[in-house]
Length: 260
Image 1 (tube, helix red, strand yellow):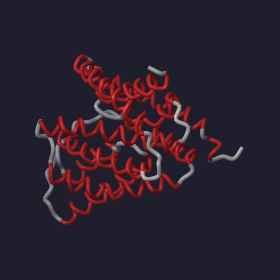
Image 2 (cartoon, one colour; image 1 turned 135 degrees about the horizontal axis):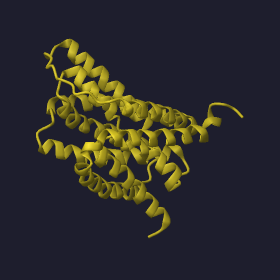
Image 3 (tube, rainbow, N blue to C red; image 1 turned 45 degrees about the vertical axis):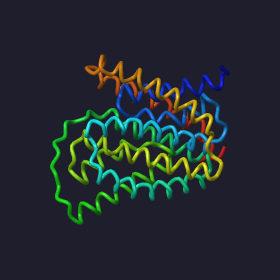
Image 4 (tube, rainbow, N blue to C red; image 1 turned 60 degrees about the horizontal axis):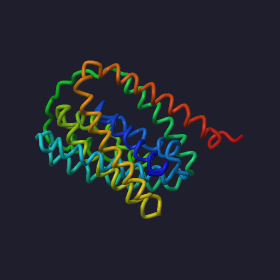
């Protein structure tokens, strides 16, 4: 097995392991790993390939939640359909932007995600809302915005979709998580196909990355049950890792926004 294949499988394993261990957030590392560990030269190829990997991982997890009855199907379908429009628009805008500038903005996004992971997660009580025009409009707005952000950066966007669904519809968190995964998968697939139409997806690399992610995800889920009491500590450690990676990305790409 070549060094490049090992790097791809190992990087996918890291993302899958983090997702399995923490239940989210790990996909934010896909693009940096593809760029700086695997050695993908073009930022847009890293984003397009990473989006495909995120999509497959989301669909796998979605199947598990659907089997357990956690999915609000009608809401999931409508949210995904609207969000795909945003994802196509966002990914088209991302493709048109200079790659180094896009990665610099990605670094800023990582800082925001890190801050969100540091915040303690409060137990929210769901308050079911009536299906009226206001709820439909708010759900549509959240779907379009989340899809656009997902497409622009090539990320899953679960950190936006889950609270957005809860606020817009009043569904419980476990249902919001399960329902969101269809959207995460759909947004990632739409982004990947948009990038693929411009030749910006490395299919073999994506397969290697996904294969590693499946193995890593299983290991992460097995370990998660043993470390469930330390999840807040693990979230803080992962947030610290995100800050370190973000700092490196911002340093590497500072020249794209601040002429030397």
